[in-house]
Length: 148
Image: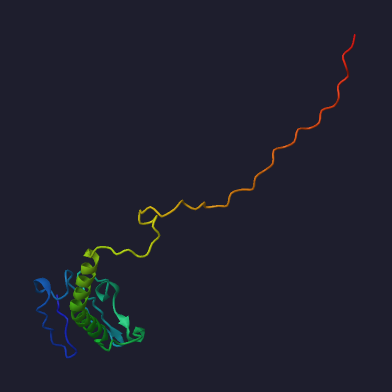
Protein backbone atom coordinates (compact mmCIF):
# COMPACT_ATOMS: atom_id res chain seq x y z
CA UNK A 1 0.00 0.00 0.00
CA UNK A 2 1.33 3.41 -0.85
CA UNK A 3 0.22 6.62 0.71
CA UNK A 4 -0.91 9.62 -1.32
CA UNK A 5 1.91 11.96 -2.11
CA UNK A 6 2.22 15.67 -2.60
CA UNK A 7 3.23 17.16 -5.93
CA UNK A 8 6.92 16.72 -5.03
CA UNK A 9 6.59 12.94 -4.61
CA UNK A 10 6.93 12.85 -0.83
CA UNK A 11 4.19 11.09 1.22
CA UNK A 12 1.49 13.31 2.71
CA UNK A 13 1.20 13.52 6.48
CA UNK A 14 -2.43 12.66 7.20
CA UNK A 15 -2.86 12.24 10.96
CA UNK A 16 -6.66 12.73 10.67
CA UNK A 17 -7.25 9.36 8.98
CA UNK A 18 -8.91 6.61 10.99
CA UNK A 19 -6.55 3.78 11.77
CA UNK A 20 -3.77 5.68 9.97
CA UNK A 21 -4.82 4.02 6.68
CA UNK A 22 -4.05 6.48 3.87
CA UNK A 23 -6.33 4.87 1.31
CA UNK A 24 -9.31 4.34 3.55
CA UNK A 25 -10.39 0.70 3.74
CA UNK A 26 -8.99 -0.39 0.37
CA UNK A 27 -5.31 -0.67 -0.41
CA UNK A 28 -4.17 0.53 -3.81
CA UNK A 29 -1.02 1.27 -5.78
CA UNK A 30 -1.35 3.43 -8.87
CA UNK A 31 0.82 5.30 -11.34
CA UNK A 32 -0.91 8.33 -12.85
CA UNK A 33 -0.17 8.82 -16.56
CA UNK A 34 0.72 12.27 -17.95
CA UNK A 35 -2.37 14.39 -18.73
CA UNK A 36 -4.48 12.43 -16.24
CA UNK A 37 -5.51 13.02 -12.63
CA UNK A 38 -6.23 10.75 -9.70
CA UNK A 39 -9.21 11.80 -7.58
CA UNK A 40 -10.17 10.76 -4.07
CA UNK A 41 -13.44 11.53 -2.33
CA UNK A 42 -13.73 13.22 1.06
CA UNK A 43 -15.20 10.09 2.62
CA UNK A 44 -12.52 7.72 1.38
CA UNK A 45 -14.14 4.59 2.74
CA UNK A 46 -17.37 5.16 0.79
CA UNK A 47 -16.30 7.30 -2.19
CA UNK A 48 -16.62 5.99 -5.74
CA UNK A 49 -13.44 7.69 -6.93
CA UNK A 50 -10.29 6.90 -8.94
CA UNK A 51 -9.54 3.88 -6.80
CA UNK A 52 -12.56 2.24 -8.42
CA UNK A 53 -13.04 4.16 -11.69
CA UNK A 54 -9.44 4.84 -12.68
CA UNK A 55 -7.83 8.16 -13.58
CA UNK A 56 -9.59 11.06 -15.32
CA UNK A 57 -8.28 13.25 -18.17
CA UNK A 58 -7.28 16.79 -17.14
CA UNK A 59 -9.59 18.10 -19.88
CA UNK A 60 -12.58 16.89 -17.83
CA UNK A 61 -11.97 19.63 -15.22
CA UNK A 62 -14.49 22.41 -15.83
CA UNK A 63 -13.83 24.71 -12.85
CA UNK A 64 -11.69 25.23 -9.79
CA UNK A 65 -12.83 25.94 -6.25
CA UNK A 66 -11.66 29.37 -5.13
CA UNK A 67 -12.41 28.68 -1.47
CA UNK A 68 -14.93 31.45 -0.75
CA UNK A 69 -16.01 31.93 2.86
CA UNK A 70 -19.15 33.92 1.97
CA UNK A 71 -21.61 31.26 3.18
CA UNK A 72 -19.85 30.85 6.52
CA UNK A 73 -19.68 34.62 6.99
CA UNK A 74 -23.39 34.98 6.23
CA UNK A 75 -24.34 32.28 8.72
CA UNK A 76 -22.14 33.92 11.38
CA UNK A 77 -23.71 37.34 10.80
CA UNK A 78 -27.23 35.91 11.00
CA UNK A 79 -26.35 34.18 14.27
CA UNK A 80 -25.00 37.42 15.77
CA UNK A 81 -28.06 39.36 14.56
CA UNK A 82 -30.37 36.75 16.10
CA UNK A 83 -28.55 36.98 19.44
CA UNK A 84 -28.84 40.78 19.38
CA UNK A 85 -32.57 40.64 18.65
CA UNK A 86 -33.32 38.07 21.34
CA UNK A 87 -33.62 40.62 24.22
CA UNK A 88 -35.95 42.77 22.10
CA UNK A 89 -38.19 39.75 21.46
CA UNK A 90 -38.26 38.94 25.18
CA UNK A 91 -39.35 42.50 26.06
CA UNK A 92 -42.15 42.39 23.48
CA UNK A 93 -43.34 39.04 24.79
CA UNK A 94 -43.53 40.42 28.35
CA UNK A 95 -45.53 43.43 27.13
CA UNK A 96 -47.95 41.17 25.26
CA UNK A 97 -48.36 38.92 28.30
CA UNK A 98 -49.15 41.91 30.54
CA UNK A 99 -51.81 43.15 28.12
CA UNK A 100 -53.38 39.70 27.98
CA UNK A 101 -53.86 39.57 31.76
CA UNK A 102 -55.67 42.94 31.93
CA UNK A 103 -59.49 42.62 32.19
CA UNK A 104 -61.26 43.00 28.86
CA UNK A 105 -62.77 46.39 28.16
CA UNK A 106 -66.16 46.78 26.45
CA UNK A 107 -65.68 47.67 22.84
CA UNK A 108 -68.98 49.46 22.20
CA UNK A 109 -70.86 46.33 21.17
CA UNK A 110 -74.67 46.29 21.07
CA UNK A 111 -76.38 45.43 24.34
CA UNK A 112 -77.56 42.02 23.16
CA UNK A 113 -73.95 41.02 22.40
CA UNK A 114 -72.88 41.89 25.92
CA UNK A 115 -75.82 39.96 27.39
CA UNK A 116 -77.76 43.04 28.56
CA UNK A 117 -81.49 43.55 28.09
CA UNK A 118 -82.14 46.41 25.68
CA UNK A 119 -84.59 49.14 26.75
CA UNK A 120 -88.07 48.95 25.18
CA UNK A 121 -89.74 46.23 23.14
CA UNK A 122 -87.58 44.48 20.65
CA UNK A 123 -87.88 45.77 17.15
CA UNK A 124 -89.33 43.42 14.57
CA UNK A 125 -86.63 42.23 12.24
CA UNK A 126 -88.99 42.51 9.22
CA UNK A 127 -92.07 44.70 8.61
CA UNK A 128 -95.42 43.00 9.19
CA UNK A 129 -97.02 41.69 6.01
CA UNK A 130 -100.11 43.57 4.76
CA UNK A 131 -103.51 42.21 5.84
CA UNK A 132 -105.07 39.94 3.27
CA UNK A 133 -108.87 40.29 2.96
CA UNK A 134 -110.93 37.15 3.48
CA UNK A 135 -112.17 35.65 0.22
CA UNK A 136 -115.83 36.40 -0.61
CA UNK A 137 -118.20 33.48 -0.86
CA UNK A 138 -118.98 32.48 -4.38
CA UNK A 139 -122.64 32.94 -5.38
CA UNK A 140 -124.55 29.71 -5.58
CA UNK A 141 -126.78 28.81 -8.51
CA UNK A 142 -130.54 28.80 -7.80
CA UNK A 143 -131.91 25.39 -7.31
CA UNK A 144 -135.15 24.13 -8.79
CA UNK A 145 -138.01 23.73 -6.35
CA UNK A 146 -138.76 20.25 -5.41
CA UNK A 147 -142.20 19.48 -6.35
CA UNK A 148 -145.03 17.00 -6.05
